[in-house]
Image (cartoon, rainbow over all chains, first blue to last red; front, side):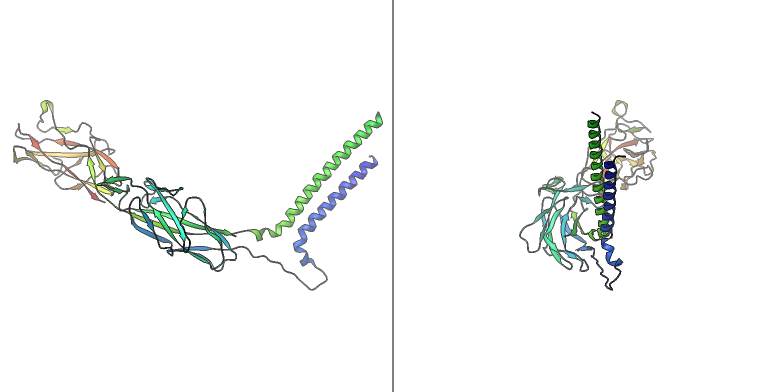
Amino acid sequence: MKWFEVNLMKREMKLGIMGILLAGILALIPCLPATAQDSGTITINMTGANEFSINVTPANWSFGTVTPNTVNTTDLTQFTLTVDSTSTCAINTYITGEGAVWADDPGAYNWTLSSNEQNDIKVYVLWFKLDGEESYIPITEGSTSFYSGTLGPGDSKQFGLKLLTPQPDFTKGGTGYFSVGSAIVQTHVTISAVAA
Amino acid sequence: MTQQRQIAYDREVSRKSAMKQIKAGIITILLAIILAGIPYLPVVAEDNGSGQTTITMNTESVMGISLTQTEWQVEGEGAEVTLNTTYKTDLPASWCTITNEGNTNVTMFIKGDDAKWVSDPSKKWTLGSTGDNGKNVYALWYHIKGDTADSYTPVTKMETAMEWTRDGKGILNLRKHGDTQQFGLKLLTPTQFIGGRTMEANIILSAVAA
């Protein structure tokens, strides 16, 4: 073996050993205080996890009897989103809607939630408006920001909904109707949160 | 020449060795970062939360049905019917279509009546109540499309919900606007009657909110 080959092998070994030592040192950094030997001080480090929960009330709401192609609104204080006071972080909030279905037989009759604020036959539109805000914001099946700022533990926001029903499925005697009568059509509005 | 080859060989060995060192260094640094990050993993974990409200709407209802047939001209050979003979509509299961023209979930009811001589309604064939015929007594049945083949249900003078004979199918409902159902009729003439009279009977189909 040549002298320079021996030197190269030594260099490789040194680098390998240094690398392993570096890895060990970095891995042990969080544990160093526990291995202190001479002093009587123990330093404890903890970082609390981000935990939160939110609640929307009321859990159920009925617009009552609706007719085709009409706008129905709730009070702007009808619904309340509350961040649980035991939450440990600020949150960002998002709102989503979904198609509406005939409660008796969801597969037999349903409405699609509009994505462009336009109703149609079997297409309805839904908006929300925060109490104190200027305008309604459309709710779609995609995620839409609910409140532009962050909400902290114990915070709450009141809001209302606006519904534009689909255009009539058929007309009888000059009046438009949906294909199912004396029926309950049901949908859900979901507000979700992520840590800010 | 030999010395030049030796120099080239030494350079190649040196280059490969340097590459090995770089690779080993990168792997070691990655390992160090991974190991150093392990204690912090729980800290960056996040929870999600959501709240939901269920929105319901009630719809207005309107009732209405339509029939594609309003008349059945029962005819045998020579445009007349004969004693104790069975006649079926030309389409046994799909002669007439009932359509829900409203939007109410309805149950279909059927009711027959005595057949009356058009010239003197007091002269009649009584509609039997059991599906049996007799002297001046005729019988009438219906068959709903999709029911057991060749199964018929008697039509009587009592208003009765139309029903499949097939197990599990139950009463005939038209649940929403545009729902349809087809049926056919069968008639058995009396065992005895006076000929030459044109007899007329009405069948009433009605929709009742289910």
